[in-house]
Amino acid sequence: MNRFKDAEHLLRVVAVFAVGILIFVVLRAFLVPRSFGEYGHYRGNAITEMAGQPLAFAGNESCETCHTDVVAVKTGGKHAGVHCEACHGALGKHADDPGTVQPPKLDTAVLCVRCHGVNGARPKDFPQVVAAEHSAGLSCETCHQPHNPMKGLGAKP
Amino acid sequence: MKITRRQLLILLPATAVAWDSILAGTPETSPNYKLTEHWWGMLVDISKCIGCGNCVRACSTENDVPEGYFRTWVERYHVSDYDLADPVVDSPDGGMNGFPPIPERGGKNFFVPKMCNHCADSPCTQVCPVGATFITPDGVVLVDKKYCIGCRYCIQACPYGCRFLNPKTQTAEKCTLCYHRITKGLTTACCEACPTGARQLADLKNPNDPIHAFLRTHTVQVLKPYMATGAKLFYNDLDGSVR
Image (tube, rainbow over all chains, first blue to last red; front, top):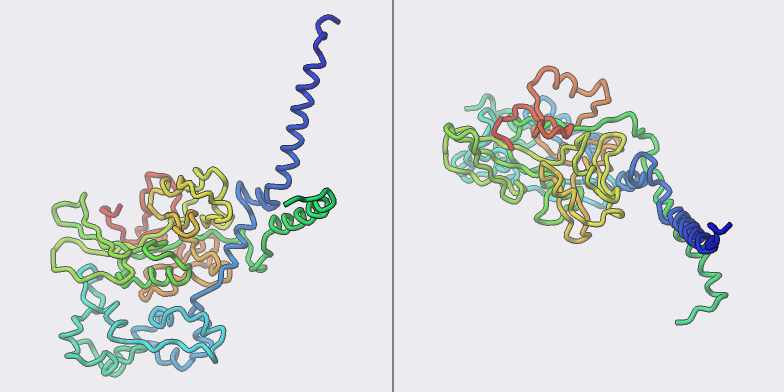
């Protein structure tokens, strides 16, 4: 009996710990998002939030559903595999609302050279020109139809 | 301001309801997409890259990447005939505005597009102290910007230098493999804009994906394989000098 003379002190410490743990458990239940741990040590809802980001590029398929005439021109040509938005830029807004949002006019003097200007690090078999020498100041589309650049021009000189 | 007991009793349940809706998060956006049926990666064919910078611009447009920072970028390599271990690399503005022509200098010259490798055993996710960065069940490494505390551990941990701290939000940011696009059946913005097909999105769990035939028939490598990161950015025609 003598050994537990001060048991009251111990009980008080135990009570403080018990209350502390209870507060921790209650707070934790409130503060940890419900989806945390759904797939791993992270918030599962973060995945769906990421997937909800709006699109800027419409994607080639949605271009081709309307612009079948351009698809026909591109078919069989050198640019058949080039997606529309590679040159025309991101047009998700145009695809959503083709009536009011019109794509900007393009400048072939900038666009063509971006890929076909001479650069020593480009693959050797990729067609490259020094624009000033190649066209003598004429714009690219004087000879080349951008959607099918070698059409009607025969073999490369 | 003084709050009476009555006001407090009214406020407490209201706060609880508000907090509850925050915890619940946003609803599912792509109901037909199953996380367990995909395992995403990407194929980069260096022999096809022309260094036009379309991918860098497309990524910037699609993901609203802050100016001067890049989730993907293109490097130009020059490997002299006599100094294979010490390549000269440049990447002006991440290749966003193309590469200025350089005088003929011999050696081997080529472009290397770079981005997050979406590693299966990613060092960046392992160091995050708060569970803000993670790999999804379909193999994409993402950052939860609501959870990120901006400690920069992950930026240091990435062996490929693919992360940065967004100066506006002060949270870590990186390539999401256009998660909002691939979950809707679209390809990534960089693949969409690549004129030569040098970048190809690959679903390694889809048996019909052309990636499988490509991996079988080509000498494909990943960057820094000795780091054992399980990188899923596969490079075809990768030169040994690429770091």
